[in-house]
Image (cartoon, rainbow, N blue to C red; front, side):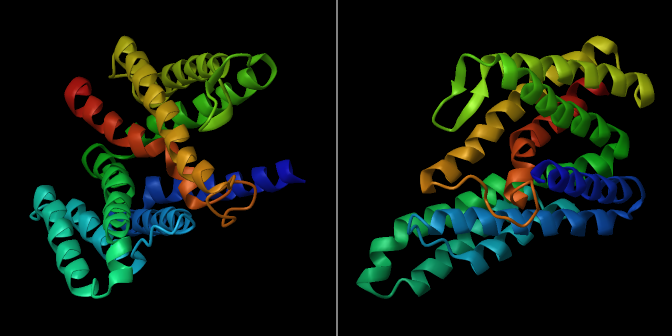
Length: 268
């Protein structure tokens, strides 16, 4: 039943993703991304709230949308948006910290609220920049490398995994599975290049796949650390069979921006 539920959810999500990436106007694509970002951010804050770190959710959402706006309105420099986050957060906490009880929780609340914005909203908005500057095809390449790489890591790691890769963050991940993920990522890169990116040299596409999927293999257990710290398996149950929004975008947090920088540096 879990496999059926997981497959059904995946089919729906991939269908929506394809339509949005391929056909949506840039404003719709951007808004779709902000919905995912805010949903993942709220799950991140909920996880940290379980450790009594007191993240300020409304403030974090406002700051995240402000960072996103700097990607959409290119006249607003990104560094100005990031500084504005620090400035607004500073004003908010100075005004809101008026009791000894709040003072005790201030360092953690201030840190985790800003970390959520920098950790989730900042990197994920690079997917919008990829679509805006390069079109949908590089995004398909990125998704294929990450999603098929994850599939390969599962199918190789499940029967053959012997050596634990990150036993605290992700006890089921193994070095054997990691190698399988890289092999599948290479196959995804070669296939994607053949289908719709023939202008990219094969060696460049394969090197991109290795580096990007390696980043994804770090990004995934990094997200898991937040879950393990509070003793939960998924960030939420919002997506049947797949956990939460934070769970679905975890690999893209580090892999997405890295892919963007590789493309603008090596692919052009």
